[in-house]
Image (cartoon, rainbow, N blue to C red):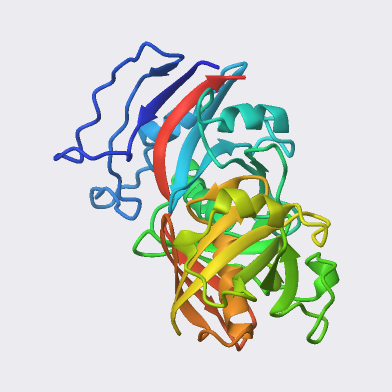
Length: 356
């Protein structure tokens, strides 16, 4: 799989207006045209008095406008190290890439490398856009918290928008509304958490009003205390086992235990799993094993599920900083509307194209 990519924000030069010098490597990947390393989406060019000027497209947007048969143009984004290949799919309700092709694109040795491929498709009903995602294993999750922040930033680039914006996005988890903030971060109304066990889904017997809260789950001979939450996708959250009630997440051998949770018989649709350490009443530290992607640096829906579980188990208040390997997310579970709000960054890594 040959690809040409251009780096923009993966490193910085002293002068942010100077583009990185194109270079080539003796490998299947050919590094081509580069664009400015730094852009301020909220800035506007001054116009003369009594004149009207159409917005001028940046080189980045012009790059994405290209249409070449058999060539996929994309932008790679990352949110706290959770990285995605973003594809402009606004002209069709069917993804341009198959699940099998997504697996190849996400391969970090022979492909572009990513945790998933995200498509911006036309909206349905009263929504502005539709989001679909293929994981690195080709499976399709209902939603992705870090991914939707990247999607929101991608839309502003595609539509050449500036400043604070909000979008109504149709997802497999229902309506999600991301908002671009004045500081460039993205705040997302993630909706209400689902706690009814069959709707998560899990077959762990409910132990509190139809919910699974600090229930026992035996995994590989060890009894864990787990709380199950859906943020449109299933999550199993644990703060410790029966033997060790207070986890130190850095000691968890994620590659060993993660798949055993994911494929446990009590989760008919598999599950994401979060291992959580309580730092304070407003600070949590977590590591995640994502369904279909494995160990990742961050998981937005997972961070939301963690705060919901922490409140239900009495560990924290409703407004927390959740520390992930890739950085912090701000999560709030509001009592007045029962919605969970997530705030965090989303940044361009590079632009590229690849033959399919």
